[in-house]
Amino acid sequence: ATHEETLGFQTEVKQLLNLMIHSLYSNREIFLRELISNAADACDKLRYQALDNDALYEGDSELRVEIEHDSEAGTVTLRDNGIGMNREDVIANLGTIAKSGTAEFLKQLSGEQQKDARLIGQFGVGFYSGFIVADEITVRTRKAGDAADAGVEWRSKGEGEFVVAEIEREKHGTEIILHLKEDAREFADDYRLQSLVRKYSDHIEVPVKMPRTEKATDDDGNEVDGSEVTTWETVNEATALWVRPKSEVSEDEYKAFYKHVAHDFSDPLTWSHNKVEGNLEYTSLLYVPGRAPFDLYERDGARGVKLYVQRVFIMDDAEQFLPLYLRFIKGVLDTRDLSLNVSRELLQQDPKVEKIKSALTKRALDMLKKLAKDKEAYQTFWNTFGSVLKEGPAEDYANRDKISGLLRFSSTHTDSATQDQSLADYVERMKEGQDKIYYIVADGFNATKNSPHLEIFRKKGIEVLLLHDRIDEWLMSHLTEFDGKKFADVAKGDLDLGDVEDEDEKKAQEETAKSKEDLVKRVKEALGEEVQEVKITHRLTDSPACVVLPEHEMGFQMRRIMEAAGQ
Ligand code: ADP
Ligand code: MG
Image (cartoon, rainbow, N blue to C red):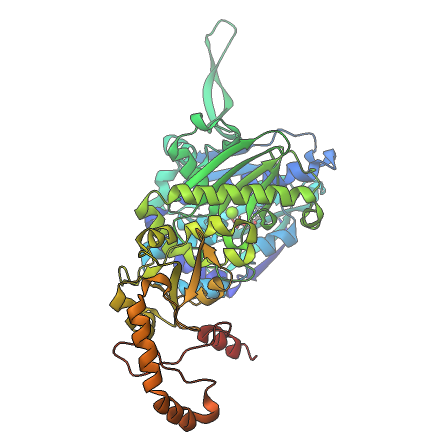
């Protein structure tokens, strides 16, 4: 090796290595999944680039991953004939973490093993996970299409720095040698490696091969002294999972595939696998995760599906196929309707993309509807992603009704902060003569629950939805009715309880209003410009007075948001 250079890891990498080695200890076998996953990605990338330029295969178009070990030396080696890396790639990919939100992510780590392990897996720090089992890693690689002398060697002990050097490398692709720690030597074992490959990488389309060495035999089947032959056997299933018929894929396989696609350690809540033929032709496999990603509320957070065109991987995070309010959905889309050289820019202009998006949106909403039948699972979903789904009615007018059916709220029916009541539940419990769905919006659950506006409703036993999420006022400004019933904010405008009030009551109210005209006048004078109007009200039973907004006025919460935004 020539031109050796020692470089320091980016600070974040150092922090991460430190944390990872400790927090992932009990999960350390995942290093293999991560490295195979990278090798498979590298094969996908080469296949994609070779579509325009066959020469990149350099005569070796049988893409594969090979795993070897040497139990005496205590090493495990992974090799792929994928895209490979040049010097710049190596320094950028294996020396830094390029992902946005890294600092934010590191802040979230708690030092609690279990929790951090899950976070780290999801963050996808794949390559560095090698250092959980290795005290030294050597990478030898060459980018497909580059000259043989443009190979690069990278090595590091995973402490503060790494070395890069120029090498000759005849084959393109990447080889990673893990020098196992004393206590991780168990991984340099045929059986162990094979079962891990099956466990984690069955669904990967690229074959993962391991060598089998046998004594050579002659034509008559007799052993030839001292000579051995090595055959490479494919260990994994090696067909893309979504291409297989549903009936032939087990739950465990679906779950393992989810973990690969979503960079998640935990199981998904549910999934939906569909093959569509006809006008549009695509296969989709969509998952609802069980946990929120760390960047769910970040503008540039990763979202979207993994896009394939006729089984050829095109891109990760293709966000054009799902609306923003379904950004938590993970999965794969494979279609014949797009061309293989489609790019992010082209996706934005292709009318077929819009059609697929609308189909996938329906699939996702149907999947949630099905999930809702399992109350416990749906509650987990709602607690995790409910406030994202609440963006739906504003973003997706056409599916407003479907989305409304999926919403869950707190309500005076349970008086609990848990949002677990559907609008259908509410409608079913409506009083005779009641024609509206009543709600109140305030900052925080207690503020809604203890609002004086509720007094009359509680007295009459009329249910009111208690909306206390930041987004609720925005949501309600885009919902007008559900199941033919209009929504009414109990803190706005004149209180009209419809036919729930009887005639006698109305009369009594009118009489009170008349007899208190003087009082009203005095209060009005005292408050002067501060208020628009002072009225006698029947909404209160215990409190003497409350502030009410005109019907079409912006609500308190919205005002506060606008003020905070400097409006
Ligand atoms: P991620 O896979 O999420 O991007 P990793 O830490 O696993 O993160 O890998 C970092 C980057 O290193 C990859 O995005 C890829 O560019 C590069 N890389 C890792 N392994 C390989 C490989 N076997 N062949 C080519 N590039 C690789
Ligand atoms: Mg990776």
